[in-house]
Image (cartoon, rainbow, N blue to C red):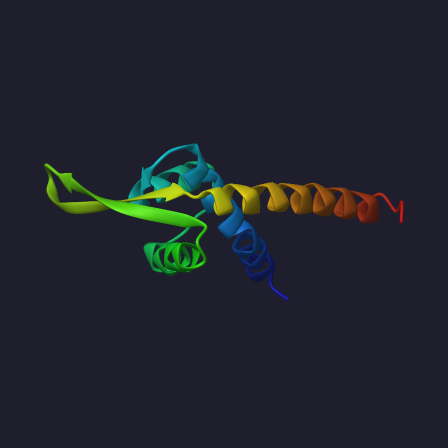
Length: 110
């Protein structure tokens, strides 16, 4: 298996969690989400982000509102819902357990 493929699959596995964490900070425009993820070295294309945002909205984890823009058409700003915050808390615990599990396996503690 190619290293790049494995790395890509690992990134995809944490993308939803990272997007929710970014949206939980403040109401945010989709291109700003991409900028934040990219600056953190988690590369994501618009074609990946938009379907994910739609799934998160349909699941009740995020909501959005349209805001008029002085530089073109209205922009859709995303915000986290209470269900989204609860979901992030659960994912936080899962993430901690996953890190511990991988560390234990790497260090042969299992």
